[in-house]
Image 1 (cartoon, helix red, strand yellow):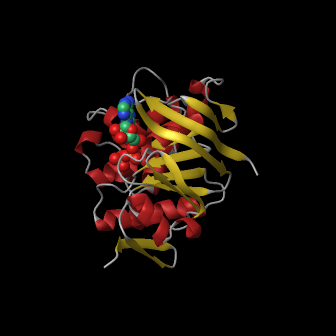
Image 2: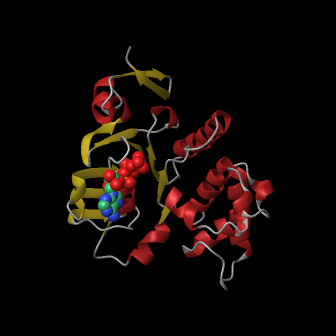
Length: 261
Ligand SMILES: Nc1ncnc2c1ncn2[C@@H]1O[C@H](COP(=O)(O)OP(=O)(O)OP(=O)(O)O)[C@@H](O)[C@H]1O
């Protein structure tokens, strides 16, 4: 099996703070991972490394077979789809929805003088339709609701047909119906064998789409536990990672957790 992500003893330090502390993590082709942990645990930072947007202060990180620090990240990044709040913040409110998706082909957020082929337009429109926002193509990003923005971002993240797809809290801010619709769309991707390797960051086990296979619990910048989802999402592990006594339930392929009474 091909190794898609391989982090060995990766640490990230900023000033006196160690944000990630000796993280080792391997992701193989075909796997769908969820990364969980309390606020400030280091999830977004870990995703930044996986996206080739941050280099380890110590340790080694290989992404899609390329070692960070030794590869031209501008060649690497188009192979990775990303949807995150940080990326959404870079999108101008005046940008049209179709351009938000199209510009991903050049790894940009904002149309300049680049030319797109009919095929690019077609792909962007199809992706918007897949995520139920095809009728919003001509609207500006700034006029969309939070749920619509999330869908447009995920459509954008798939524009380059990436080998690795990184989703940072894709369901945050969605209402219940919107969350369930998004999770259904992600479950469909997760079940497609041709789909990219998926890594999804969330705070909530309820936001894990069906078809996800593995989990990593981060605690204070360290891997608390990582492995097959059913082994990771136990009351014991989640309670330790979130610092709260929790009970966990599984209903078919969906999970829920609440404080133990
Ligand atoms: N440049 C920086 N300098 C100092 N500290 C930083 C820097 N970037 C991040 N941090 C800190 O590192 C920790 C981990 O941040 P990160 O955003 O990765 O956490 P997270 O698990 O994604 O959190 P959340 O769930 O709140 O989004 C936080 O305490 C944050 O304040």
